[in-house]
Length: 149
Image (cartoon, rainbow, N blue to C red; front, side, top):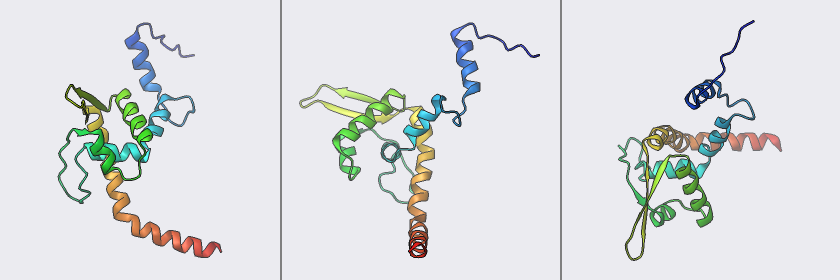
């Protein structure tokens, strides 16, 4: 019978937990993180802050800080409440930083952290894939819906 080592220090417990993350388990915290990062507004915010706002395939993005109002204008259809909640959640998760500059009126900017930038590289690919393959998906939907009637 194998005896499992008991984590004694905070670092040991963290290391042990890290090896045990499994998003297929309902209680795993990585499942909550997957839920967060798979949200369309999260993907679009990360892409915007990552410099992908042009939407041009092959464009070389340069991460940039953006004001709340810039993000709100860029993200067509996002409500003020949803944008605020999403930005707060991303800040809490360490994916972006919020900087307040004491001007009149106060200037608030958002910028990707290194952790957020690493995730941006993945979300950028998702956004590009969706844009590139949308015609194929629409055609498939039409065929499926025509066969279902």
